[in-house]
Structure formats: structure tokens, C-alpha cells
Image (cartoon, rainbow, N blue to C red; front, side):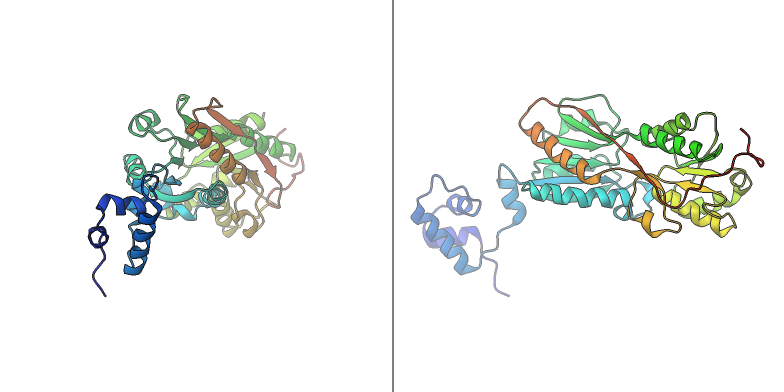
Length: 341
């Protein structure tokens, strides 16, 4: 392998400054004659000069890169990018950004301090943050001077940040009202916490479930722990006829465990999830869930970033509607016969 060609070598051979060669490489040619540009470009090609992409991006005013940072929370057990909500969000974002002429760079981290370092390292034009619920966005804003959009954040409104969320309360309410109409009066609520998104979904459920009785199962954040937890609470589970899990993953896991232990879905237990990811169609029975539009949220993220770049006024928090997706995991039960009115 030959010795790497340096900018200094090109400059010396052509009798120009290293700054001139560097400016040609980085596209800053307004003050350089066309003849000099052609000479530099020709020799660069002839010598097989390979520029550093990082150097080019750092030298440009606009890198056309949008960073997407995902909270690698412990509950994902090292598989955050395999989560249905995360993968659907990334899939939608990459196409929305590409359509707008931008590139997407993804980082998964639990370290909030990594966010600003990641942005500065690549001279990003903006960022989208996923999964950081009650984080210190004000402090981050002080460290970063690029616009950013947050998915499902919980913080005071800031004119330099756009928070894109969905109507979690109404999603839970729709599930609760639906199960109530289907005759259910005792339901399980399955989540690993009682804050932020999960809290809103469960509060909405209780409102929609009206006079029905609910039992909260706060499950462990690892899969093996959840399996043991369900087995330990099987007596309570058997007293209920419905379950609402705050994510499709938890709903599918729960269905698997109870069916393995002789509880038939939906004949003896109706189950509903949240998010409507690909898992819903591939489990048995197919999972009833709350759907959200990942593509629409991605488009809104791009538009919000553009608005922030241009310092135009606009909504600081935007909420998208959700809808029930009816499948096979819910069954209407007969009133009476042991069910309390």
C-alpha cells in the first residue's frame, strides 16, 4: 500500500498554499480562480487523495446531518434498536429526513452527558431525542446551540425546543372504554413504572373503564424477572378478565405466559397493548392495540427542525391523535354468571 497523500504534498507540487488545497476539497472556491480549482482537483484525483469525511463535515457550515439519540434504557437489555416503537420511529425518520435532503446518524446511550458531545463531534444541524422522559432539557439547550426535537418529553415549554408527543391519555381511555363496553369489570394494568407516558396511559384507562376495578402490576425491567413475576401473581391474574399493557412487547409477553399456564386468550382473558408495532400481527392471537402514526410524527419532526432553524414561531408542544386497532385478542364476555355489575 502506498504512502497516504497529504494536503501539504499537493500544495507543494502545485505551488499553492495548503489553505487553497483545503478550500477546494471543502468546496469553498468562491475566491479561487477556476483554473486553480481545476489544477488542484486534477492532481487530487491523479494522486488518489482520499479526504476525511469528518474533516469535511466539520469544515462546512451545514453538515446536513441530523443526530438521533435513543435512550438505551436498562429495560431494553441491550436490544434497544430491536424495540418495536424505537425501530418504527427510526424507520420513519430516516425516510422523512432523506426526503428533506438530510442524513441521519444514530446513537444509543444511557449517558445524558453524551448527547451534547455527540452533536459537537459531527457538527450536526439538529437532533431528535427519543426515550428521555424527565431529562434536563434546559441544561442541554444551554450546552447546544442547534435545534432539537424531543419525542414524549416532560419539561416546561421552551421556544428553542419542540416536543412531539401523542395523546397517551386518550389512548388509554379508548382501551378502558372498549373493554368496559365488552363487559369487562376487573382488569390488570401492566407497566414497569408509574411516571411519564406509562402513567398517562394508565390514568386514561382508569377513566375509560369507569366503574370497573383495576389492579396495577409493576413488573421488573428484565424479561426473566417479568416471567417469574407473572407466575408469582397468577392467583390475582386469574381473578381478572382483561389486561392492558402499556407496550405491545409487554402485552405479547403476558399473553405467552398466561397461555402457557392454561389461561386462554381471548376466551378467558382479553389483552390489549400500545403502539401497534409489527409484533401485533405476528403473535397469537393477533394483538388489539393502540396505534400511532410514526410516519406523521417523523414528518412533523422535520418540519419542526426547519421552523427552529428559521426561528419562526410555532407550537412548542405538538400532540398527535391515536386510535384503537381491533384484532383478535379481545372478546366480549357475557354479563352475569359470576360477573359483578
